[in-house]
Amino acid sequence: MNASTPRLRFAPSPTGFLHVGNLRTAVANYLFARRHGGQLMLRMDDTDVARSKPEYEAGIQEDLRWLGIHWDEYARQSDRMAQYEAAADRLKALGLLYPCFESEEELAAKRALRLKRKLPPVYDREMLRLTPEQRAAAEANGKTPYWRFKLSDGVVTWNDLVFGERRVKLPSVSDPVLIRADGTFLYTFTSVVDDLEFGVTHIIRGEDHVTNTGIQIDLMRALSGKPEKIGFAHLPLLTDAEGGKLSKRFDSLSVRSLRKDGLEPDAIIAYLARLGSADDMAPLTRDEVTATFDLGRMSHSAAVFDPRQLLGINRQMIHRLAFADVVSRLPQGATEDFWLSIRGNLDLLSEARVWWEIVAEEISPPEQPDDADFLRAAADALPAEPWDKNTAGIWTKALATATGRKGRGLYHPLRLALTGEESGPDMKDLLPLIGRDKAARRLLVSAG
Image (cartoon, rainbow, N blue to C red):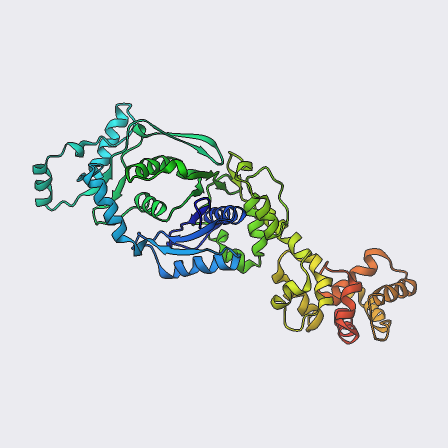
């Protein structure tokens, strides 16, 4: 990799399965890296030992592979504790990482007092004035310190690839805790160490990380990094139809639920790539999505995740899939004629199973007593085989002449008897697939 090669990372926490909120971040990093000839690292931010689970780590990898999102390098933060310890020691030596002993109750009381005095609820840095003797006394009393990073004064600015110039006033932010009292490191710290050591050149994540970016830029500088050489991009948040923030609690929006429902990977990628951008939604191929992905065309406002719109993209993609693209996912025995007959009526590929049962297996159509005589006449009038796409027209024309029926009165009872459905693919395509024997039985069963 040369110095100009973009290097990005998707860094989920394996505390749950992928949902559309963090998947959108994965898609943006993946497409940016692919479009610009860069590399993508998949990094598990698994320092939360209590909540991180191997099954979630495996599930995230499985979901990404299913979506066709491939990575060039893999890392786990749990394997890098020595690097974090070394970085923490450097900050301690510089006097930028200081021990604190306040309890949650004491901190809450401090925040309440500042708010009562009309002051921002920012940490007061009282522990910076702690003497060695006071620290020793606290530890002798059984207290274990947690560690805060001393932020610089002033304002951190950067040219965001989505929002343009962004600013974070550090004096208005509390010094962040980087190490808990139990010795575990927080994401704010480990992410910076990793981004610097792995040579990450672009960080793309949600807008809710803007303040965090200001903090991390300051932390990078303290660790002798050069954050000015990193491109930061913050994607506007996704909301549901009611304007609520999407989260891991929305199980119906997990990647594995979308997969179970039969959504196409390319439809999901195409939808999330354009969601919240100035570009129109379209059923684009992976190459087309990649070639047109542009962070500069992202809106600055929150985007609404609309499952109906995603389903519309999925429908359009299915309608143009060739038989060779789907044959391995169709019921055994399905033919190209079958696929070409039904694909225009599918929202999800999983619905093909229903139509295969209709044309290839036995069904129990509903009884239609009011149309019994007509259905018996229809059975008697079935042409001899072989059948082709002209058979339905010849048959229904003869029935219309013999019975005087036309329009819905002619076609609806036949469709309901032959398929058990109110609507569906054109009968000229379905009838040859059903065949004369099954057609005759269904017409007589429906006649009662």
